[in-house]
Image (cartoon, rainbow, N blue to C red; front, side, top):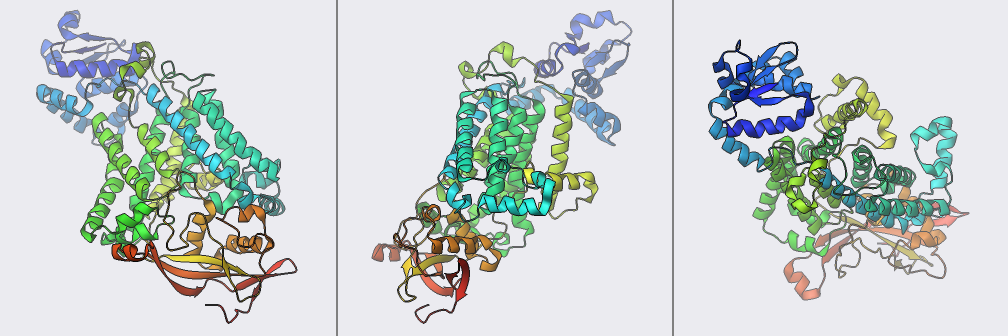
Length: 611
């Protein structure tokens, strides 16, 4: 039994919170009513601090009494720290004395930090909303890939899944199933790839409808992992990693029932919610950390955003306007970016209203990024993780679960906590690596991270560690005679300077994105690019379907060349005069002029008509 001061409003708020945490394991009573039962305990001790009496007659008070009470309710972490962490016990006792001596002030502080919900209002409805948003993201991801899959990984695609699996089969033998975890070991045919995209879309719809959420979430993750594995370079973006990691954790967050309903779902497991919040922390903090540790001068002197809008992979038309903003505003925006990525994540683990503010700051950043860039479903998925930081108290009462459901203690499982601890410790490896801090002390979890990497359940994050200050752009041209060249126009990446940059997110044109990476690299380090060129010379219909149009509809060209241009946004005066969004300057050939000989890709001597 925990005895407390029934005249103290501050005490009343916290007793209700602890009552929710401990359930029936602890009885709570005011000392005004029950102290007479314990004449051996001086009354002044009841007035000074809460008192806990246990069945064996043991008494404790103050901070220790609180921690022991929580431990009886299955929350033994604070008591373990109290017993074994040096300095924790005297610090917690001092904090308790300060709070007990200034209870009216701390009552006001409690109301300011927690609002009307010192007692946790639950997370069942918020989790239900998260799964609807996750289902929508899965649907977008599968549908977006569905219209591209044959051109990317089909039998006549750029990187055929069949060839990838055959090479691994010869190299790894039985170990291939671990190195490349994919259902495509059953079949790598075009029909099976399309079927996987269709099955993933159906699973996303079922997840949104609430049908067997644990099962559908698990199957959707398996299908997306299967496609990401065989699509290689084209599905190795950070949002693909984020979707796979969030999708994996969602399996353990999903309600264990055949039909999910927002007002009847049980409380989600605490460990799974904590890992989701930790994932959001890692995503944001790592993004800020890699910018600072990369040594890039544009991030250090806060000038990176003066280049970002025109050098990002697929800028929309709004990026042109953002690029025209004055330098002081770009510097201020860069500073705010570091504040949100580097500081706000730490407040995700603080009391209710403070963590809401941190999630709100992250959400505002994601909205601004989505307004000025095309980053597939990345921003939407990050917003979904921000949603999980909230609780049911932010929604209208009519939307929330019934009072009986909200009072149910979340499902706890020893296996779940063990798995959560393993995932947390493993995730420290890429997080500390982003800071260039040693990870040897993590011992076997370094090995766990390497072994789990094919399944992408823990990944590393950090976009734009080094800001690109120039924009090389590859323009592909074909020719029948080596003198007259016709341009292959892409759907979304910059080409014609007068074509307005468009919004395409949440759909991701995977080939257009890869062309941005290729332009920043050497063609010898981009084997997919040469395969792409070979498919164009072969006239592969699935590949040319990825482009805006095929300038050689009847027969493929004999020669192909890739010309590099330097692209820069025009200023307002230039756009008024000529209507161009870009100005460009040729820089030369990206690779030798290419042709096919005997079905093989070969380099030919550049012709005089080349740039």
